[in-house]
Amino acid sequence: ALGYTDKSNWYGTDRTDSSLLLSSDSKLPCCTYSTPPVSSAFLPGDTDWQTEFLPSTLQKIGDSVDNEDGAFSECAIETIQLPIGLCFIGSSTFAHCKKLGEINLPNSIRSLGENAFSFTGLTKVDIPASVKRIESSTFYACDHLSNVSLHEGLDAIGNCAFEFCDKLHSITIPKSVSFLGVRTFRPNVVISCYAGSYALDYARENGYQIQNAAKQCKP
Image 1 (cartoon, rainbow, N blue to C red):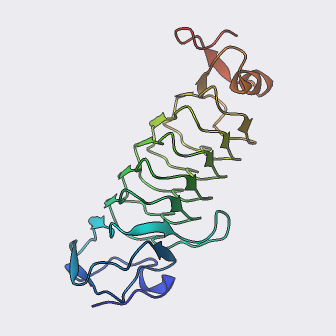
Image 2: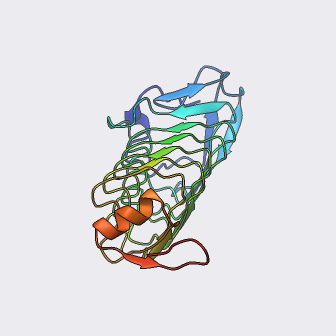
């Protein structure tokens, strides 16, 4: 079994073993568990580490929203299954995972750290209502990201969170959002929002095009 005790075990690896065997005393780097991983649990993968499954007891990946944890940074994964119960994804966790095109965020997620998914190959992301804050540069320079779903309950989106997402042409901002940072989106993104909302004021002040979605936004 491989005992992943520090970031260097995973950082920037293409993984050449066909599967990962976790024993009861082996843990992923920079991670917090409710209970130890199940003994002798196989996590399927292949030579390119295309798909990875994480233990169901995993609660946190990383320790900080703004210091580089980078547990999976620069790895060659294409998809990863995040367990229900995971509540925190730390800074730079999946940064520069160029092949990562798909990820499903469970409804237990509460916080996404800075640069958590920056420079990845994601094409779409549905951020659950459990997430209250998207930190700065979380999805920075995701060149293929074209569809982002945000939900009521989200309070803040940090600086440059979606900057240089060149295929993201429009986005709907929930009424609950009370803070949007500097250069959160690229300049020509069309923003749909609610009448009287903070997002409407932000869009006007920063010169974004405002879309009159049905009963949502009145410029």
